[in-house]
Structure formats: C-alpha cells, structure tokens
Figure 1 (cartoon, rainbow, N blue to C red):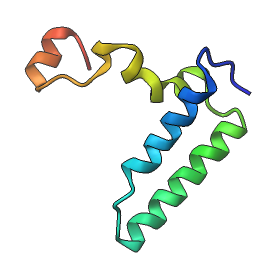
Figure 2 (cartoon, rainbow, N blue to C red):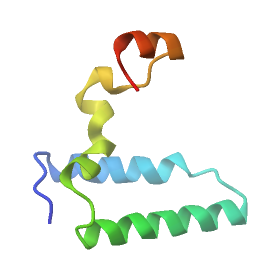
Figure 3 (spheres, rainbow, N blue to C red):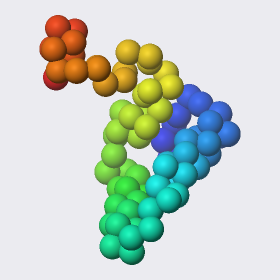
Figure 4 (cartoon, one colour):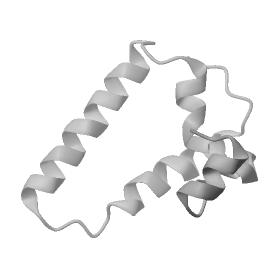
Length: 82
C-alpha cells in the first residue's frame, strides 16, 4: 500500500494508541460515532483516497517537536502558524 519509512512495530503502536485514546468512552452513541469514523478512515486508506501526507499526519507529533499546537493564539500567530 503506502510506502512508509517506519518499522511495522511503530505503526502498530500508533494504531494501538489511537484505540487506547478512546478506551474509556462509555456512551453508546459516542462509541457508534467512533466506530463509524474509524470505518470511514479505514475505507479511505484502503481505497487510496488518502495521500501519503494524510497518512503521515498521525506520526507528525513524534517526528517533529514543533508540530504540536502552540500554547495560545498569540504565540501561534507570532510563529506564523494558521
């Protein structure tokens, strides 16, 4: 599929982290929405509707320390971020 320059273990770890992030969701409607969104993401990835940079956005925080969101609006504005 996509040619990612990372080991398979790092990809599996990131997928696991995405699942664990929503581990404590108890409301049934919220779970249904999460399942629907994950199914849509999976289909888009399998159908190659995503470009490589869309797939790599999940790993951006680990690669680039400046990729995190700024503390407030003014600091982000002064850095030139959108």
